[in-house]
Length: 306
Image (cartoon, rainbow, N blue to C red; front, side, top):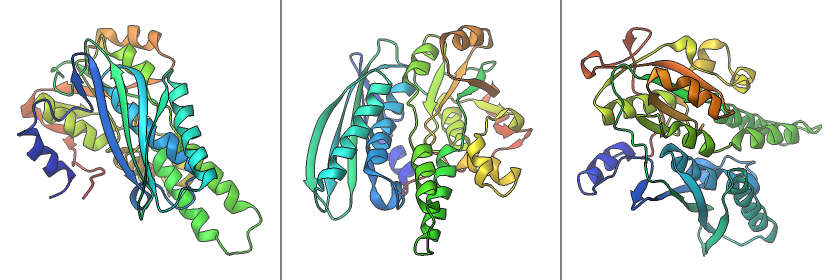
């Protein structure tokens, strides 16, 4: 059973399961777990790990249209190295500061693999689920897609250079990779979108999969225009041509941008209210129209645990 099948199983047992976060009396709560082998390539600094781990949970708060209030993390590692532990906490604190919230601590434990479990807390009286998209809405995405895919390629290039009489190139590759691996959770954009969005989620599993998830939750179809998808310039630095760049940007995932459906007449208000770019990439259709890109059926591909 992979992650998606497990989530479907649990949705039958847990009321409200399926959105990016749970909401209880206006309190938004979400949790994530990241592992060294699957989430932090060789060369990922502990600062970046702290930033990224906490940022992933903050992104779920953003996807609910909520204000972030605090974050915590459970940090487990084979040993507690002073510099690594401090770097992790500073990365976690800095990503919280970026979105005007606070990192307030967590827990420590021994483990044979570096592992982080994070929880972010937010607040909203009007959460935005994945399940409200309506035919006629436009489908939008914040920012650009593909930074994490580009980061992974730079990590891989650095690993291939190790031991080759390096002239500083490995360090430069790792600096670039870590920079791309740090991202700004879209809390402010989520707050701006919230009064208008009929459905919203983040793109952590990839844009293509996110579109399918939103369509499934909302019982609707979606038509995507490929030429409108915002591809980050960093992807083109590493991709072998435009086709590969498009593939990485739409299916790799881990970009933590917001994917939202909203009435077209709300676009001006949203764009005026946030400093992040907002690209219209398609429209919501009836369920019988299915999920398409440029008129063809869109294959459901993206990141899945398990």
